Length: 217
Image (cartoon, rainbow, N blue to C red; front, side, top):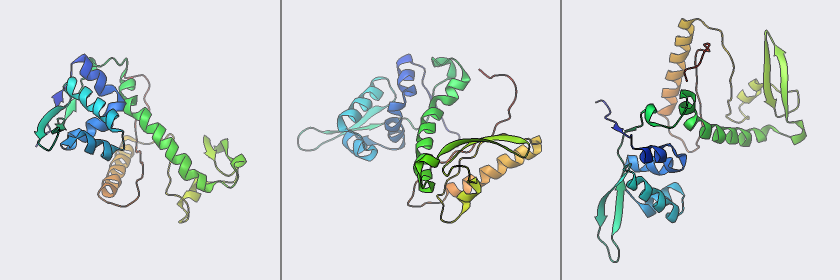
């Protein structure tokens, strides 16, 4: 069944939608009904901050109060947001499509870099050995960061005792058929692991795009 999206076009609602401070609260409200105190505990936020964000979401129409639960004293208010929202690009104040793509990418990049550093520190014996390398490998000039001065290969991360850490990036020269095959294989691998559950959280990023001249902005 096709997902039916509620369009968000009101300027104040768009402003709140684009503010990443509200995203965890909005995302949780999209999945089920919450009281403010339960939502605050779930997200690890202060109750006052959560209450402010929920009330702001309600004020701009991105969430609504669904019911009052009677109890001794003040009744409990329950809130919910629509399960599918869409802000048309032309309704945003963003200047380029790159800005749109970077909206969530920037915050994820910060979290991902922090996680890479924390995991990578397990490979460091002496922080004075950490450095930025630039070197020729085959026909390419490679730039990377090493945790152990010059004597380090990223293949070392595949050792059983090494952290489960992968942070590859670069340029591939492929036919379109090979690029589509890679796209399919990466998607299938990711889909397989998304079905698994385990006790440890891992951030992941998978990307592939043709490096064509020009800009989509």
